[in-house]
Image (cartoon, rainbow, N blue to C red; front, side, top):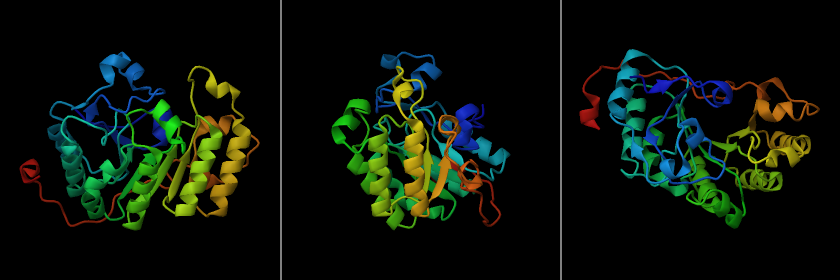
Length: 278
């Protein structure tokens, strides 16, 4: 059984590889696609997630079989720093394994300061990790309405700033964009804090028709000016580009692999029973 896989479709724009450690999520986001993807009801998916059966054993088997030279995202299904059954110990051990086998990693979470419990492990990766947060609302009331179990906006923003100040490469995912005005306020805030290195910007996709009433052209035009003036690394997702064809973008702003984390150099790895060490 392989745990690390190559995403397809829109997910491929986020990372060339991914790994899902848990099943379920406690964030209960209204727009979440995971229940539909897993053919589960919301009641059967949202709650306290459990680690996938033998996930660490299979993860190490994958890492022994192949050297991954491009980033592995944690994760597309669920959140590795939500309120889970093992207090994210599976996440911590998985990170140590990935670092041990010199695998570059991207971590995306709405867990806020829960991510900081592993800041020591993040630092061990050096340049070969990027840690990010999904940013949707600056207004805490709206955030709780849409993402009731996730960390509040200030918590996520402060976490990004702490990580950035610790020398860890950071990114922000602006997807979904539920209210463009809120996303633009968040971009402005992160630029003021100088807490984010790389910005990934998308849109709201097929949620009760809300996306049909948004002027995506205007949103992208305003966002791109702000980010370019700040000299930030940018990736604009295809779904947003398609709805804003008059916004001229540079090649590095539409190349999904331009700013991904890649494998670094380490001493030759000696394979052993590493799980016992962690």
